[in-house]
Image 1 (spheres, helix red, strand yellow):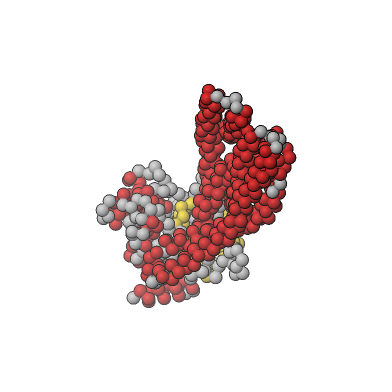
Image 2: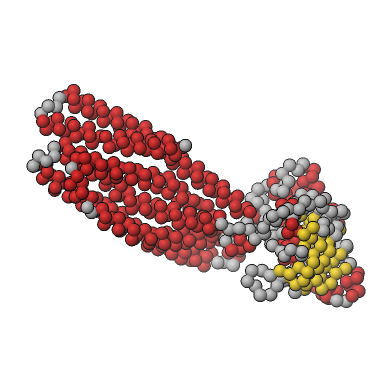
Length: 561
């Protein structure tokens, strides 16, 4: 309905504009015939002023309605994109860098908005004005109209030829803008690392090179536009030259009146705008179509973990997880990350140790349903996870990954991210379990201290413990800590593990660590190597078996002496 009223207002503007030359024609004819009077000319002038007021008011309404529609469309598209991105999983974000997604949600969306706003208006306006002006011109003199429009097929052929190049070159511009955005994002986020390695100049050179490539791509696009726009104006001026020559002769020979000649030129001026707008509209639509195609490609992306057609209801979760013959390979890698892993996890403190690349993180991510797994490989409370909804499974798990992420907000906001309604007492209890409460209170603003982007104002160990407090506050039956204490000193890690042992009563707490010593009190320890579980049992049992675990433990104890 908004568009209907908007285009109705636009048509009123066009009608008023087309009527003004008719008024001028009558005034000129009266002057030529010698029957004009001051009152009559004043009447014609007043009518033109009235039409101008109508044009101004209707122009306000179509701008408000149609351009407002394009902004609402942009808002809806951005919201749909954001909501869709939240449904996608890790596999997608490993393929598509954040900078590209930022470019899609800014530059590409702006192009779509412009095409659906001013582009659509200019197209409809040009179409209506073209046929209406041609109709009025043909009414005045059909032959002169044919002469005036004779150069237009040349413009149509030129536009068709150049539109394909516009599409291709604008696509390259948008892709290069995505790369430039990603380059800027990664530079800002890794600023401290660049300074530590004194790579500012090198990074600046890389960015400058990409910027120059972006400029070159834009210049190539501008060359096509530089042909299209002047060509439209040149052909419009040729039409004007033909009308002045042949129309002037018709006026001299009295085949048309002077008023008809003036009106005809006025309509030709109106026809010149559509010819000029043709190149601009083509450019806008090509940009919009290219950007919309990029957005549609994103919207067609599907998560690799699909919801089951028939979802089973999950009973009360006590933390029992069973893994049967689980194997997993990342993307195009040849070697599996996990090879036939089978293990039963029950409530209590469970430790996972092993060399780097042994499959510890992969196991944690699969348990947290970050990647798709084969049916019959992971069971929660005896139910295949592939028959349960993702929300049901993930709502039972609190996950602390290796690369913890903190928002540029207060410590309290970061801890309560998963449970915004938590009380201050509950927040502090979680922080005490994570052995971070005292350090928070030592800060100037306590829990209201702002920690900067990615927690840049605090140490790595503090970041990890705040992330751990966030997971603990969620109070879920399963807690997975994937080497989330690697930046914490040995003594503090011992304190945290003891706190988790108390916290984990009635819960399944899975703790991955490169350090063996903090896990000596775990109810069960799993040892992984080359994607397999090579040992399992309590600390004393594993030491007495004198296997891989005993070797690691002995080596670490000797290193720490």
